[in-house]
Image 1 (cartoon, rainbow, N blue to C red):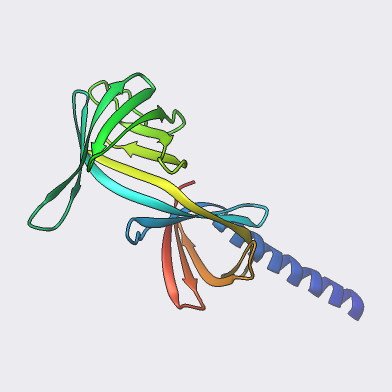
Image 2 (cartoon, one colour; image 1 turned 90 degrees about the vertical axis):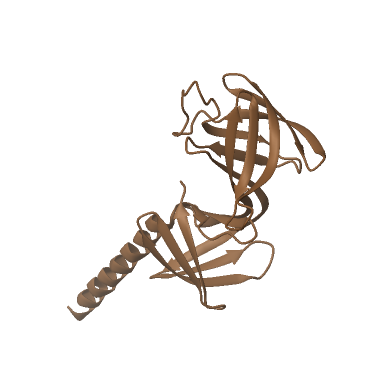
Length: 214
């Protein structure tokens, strides 16, 4: 009888711990992007169901834009005496799902071909502003850049810079991240509420906030 009770108790504890583990995994699985950006560099991390992850450092910029016919003017808004800083002026050849963009930025001339991402929910049939939506194009360094133009006049731009991969494990509110190709290990506590993820690095006592993007 005692043996049966011990087996039952072990089974209950195992099942309870597995439920906690599975719940933690379900909360984390998906793609997250850092809320805080330092010097236009952000972080995107994707936790996969097979306990693998991909960590990407991303160049991120938010511009304002004005579209006058086929001329695209982009600028930064700053809380300084000079409220607006011109980024560049581009000349567009506009087609339904393709835009040829020719620009001259600080003496650097280039031409890029932007392809509309039709899977993006924010795409629009606004005939007065055909830019509204998500576009992908090849960045000079060779990576795929993404531009999202919003009706509000915001231009969100990002391009991946470098990648890291590895595996992770979850116990309670602690996640252990092991990086491939080296012996680095990162131990964080995590907290998820809605579409926000907070990671606290226990080694550095540093917190990072992420929002779910997928």
